[in-house]
Amino acid sequence: MLESEGVHVNTVNMFVKTKFNSRFDEWVSSLPPKARDIHSKRIIPGLWYPSYDAILVPTKKVRNMFYNGDKIASWEIGQFSTSVTLTGIHRLFIKIATPEFLVKRTADIMHTFYRPAKAE
Image (tube, rainbow, N blue to C red; front, side, top):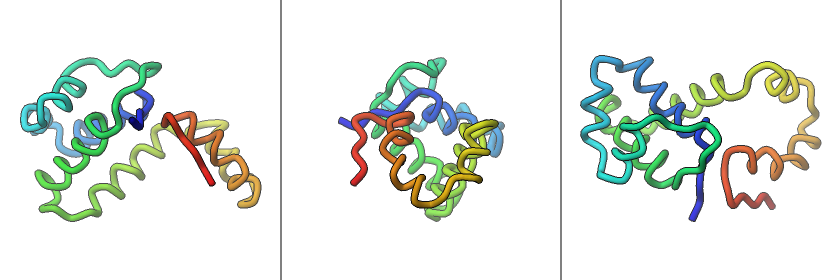
C-alpha cells in the first residue's frame, strides 16, 4: 500500500482552507469515513498515511465540490503543495540542479513524500 508523509497530506487541508475556508467543514464531512478520520484530526508531519484515503479521495472530493469535476483541481493542489513543501534550500536545489542530476536523484526525492517509492 502506498503511503504519503504527513507534510504532503496536510497540504490538501491547507489548500481547502486557503481557497474554500467557509466550506472546509462541509468538505471534511463529505469525505468517506477513512478519509474523514484523517482530515478531521491534526495531521502529524512525521507520520505516514495511506495515500488513497489521505490524498486521492480528498483530492477527488475537492475536484467534484469546488471545480465541477474539472481535473485542473488536481493540478492546482499539486502546485499549492509544491509551493508549501519545497521551500528554502529545496527550492534553490531544484532551480540550480541539472535535469540529469534531478532524474538520477528522483528516487531519493520520492522517498521524502511516499513509501514505498520506486523510480525507474
